[in-house]
Length: 317
Image (cartoon, rainbow, N blue to C red; front, side):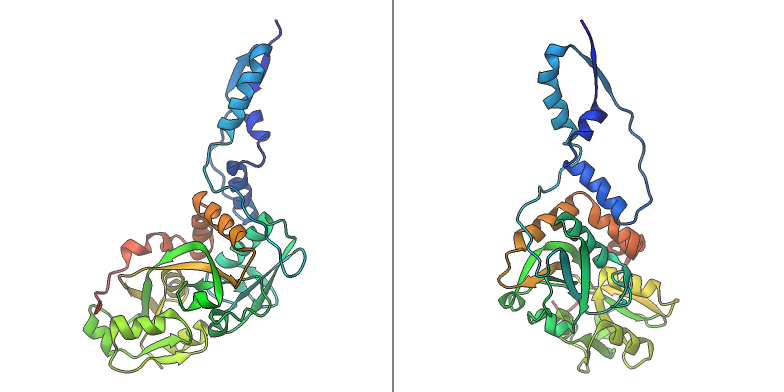
């Protein structure tokens, strides 16, 4: 009786749409040059009569190494073949690198590229807009916004939100020589906020500073004001706070985190027929480790341990 050698490696190759294949492809496509330990194919000797029964089981096993959300929904871009994304600041440390005309990398940019690939689109086009306009639903004709946006009931009146792709505590960033050991010290500082952000309300409600916060147009302007001593403290989402401090040449530090984390999601025009497809993509990228991988690559390893290393600031609520 002739024998047929069936390897689990071959079975897995037949499962090109499986989640483990997609996860590996996404990592390589995002620019990673890291590689895990090699797997040796496990050979199983089968009689021809058993192949029909065992091969499906091998295929199922080969496709079950990683569990992620299956693709769902249909994405219809406004421009055929192109995913158009709007954001506020380019460059933004760790999240958007390059210039508005030529984006070269960053966590949210690479996330957009991965979504475009998943949706079968050939390219990503990036536009910039003021943050307060984005959260009011004015996306400048873009398919979606990636701008560290927290869903709120007010914003949901004009925007459709995806499943979260980050969960982040508001983090206090100050100049390196400034300590923020307690709420009384924080209240005595001069605060700055970006117009339209949830941080404007958080500073007033949870910190209650002695002086009204100064309002700035975008995060770049806000951080410049902090470095120039126009203000003493700002709130940023934790990953952005960590990378901003790390790249400030020791001028700034992430001094404290607030006790209430916020979710961060993609925003789409409302109503949106693309919400299910975007939800499915972000759930899959979260489940298979792609989000964590992008954070390590673009924001840096310090962001991974920031939640446990940055002190907690007790606030009024």
